[in-house]
Image 1 (tube, rainbow, N blue to C red):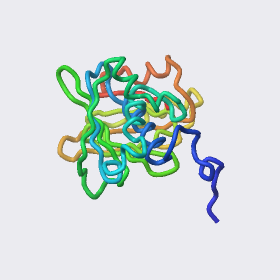
Image 2: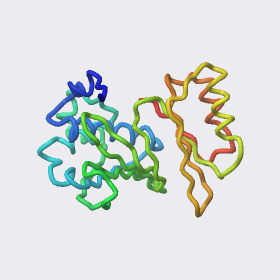
Image 3: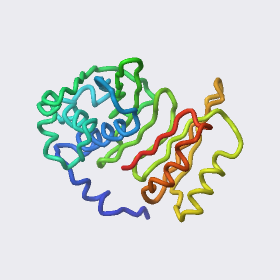
Image 4: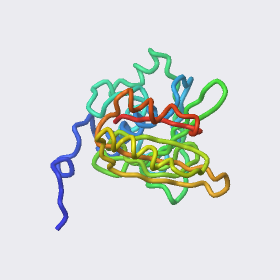
Length: 221
């Protein structure tokens, strides 16, 4: 028999109306903001599937804007996120699109525009306020945002997983999940490690600030 927690039955504490279209969308937006570099100038939301068809009625648009501004799913400011964004000079745009059949119907591609480049994150709302990040700047992965997560990209080399896991183990961190995705054309590896609690600044510095990584991020949920 399947086991269910209270969260699965009652759903998340949220500003409605929909756990999938509102709470899930807000979590995608906030997680994408944390993953991406700071200093973006504007953001575009490419809405896929049912997100594209019902985003106004279900508040998906307001939830996404609130998410990239750092609002939690139960923040009443979500209802006024457009007005708040306009006051703070946050530029945003919604575009209906088709991301392809491989993506969940409740998906969005969030593109952050900077002065000299763009970054994007694709996320899917999978029900009950839960979400999964499935693509970061063209790298396919699975990141559910349930635990603090270390995201590393590097040229294929030996010892990276052992290096990171040994630091975590020595400091009594438990690894909740670990996944690698390798780009066969470039030999660039994307490593995601979910841990049981937040990193201290000292441990974060020991892992993140190393020349061996092309890109290193730490995301707290």
